[in-house]
Image 1 (cartoon, rainbow, N blue to C red):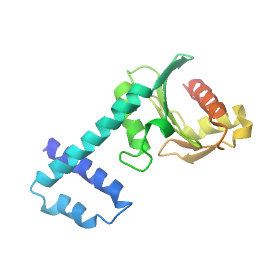
Image 2: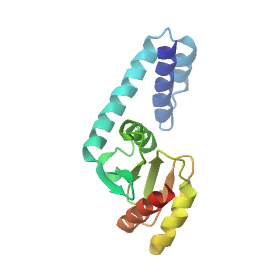
Image 3: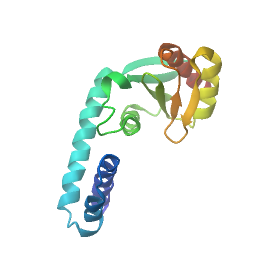
Image 4: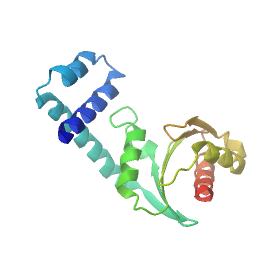
Length: 174
């Protein structure tokens, strides 16, 4: 049943997030092996509600710009995400990107004080983007921090320079 699998995925994702703060192994075991459907459905609904609330906030605060034929959605993750609450920034940006990418050249950038996440509609290399951004913003000490997460780190205080450099590098990569 597709709906049941989706509920389990969402419920386990939410509980796995909270697992990093408190031991939730018994709850995850209950979800997977002893649940008749009600617990997973309830936790899955919490997942959807929390994600939807954050996506609505993020969508209202995205700055959209076009650079060299690529549409960019840029979100201030310090101002419009909850760093220590669900959903984590990468999950929020994944969902936001899926909703807003329209099949054209599109990138979603979430930028904080000293880290940045990239999502693109094309197979853009985060490592290549970070290397090019480091050339464009040499004082920022730009480095790839997580290829899977699409994460780049940089020095605090260099946010504006890094945002400009990453947007330029991503546009070049398309």
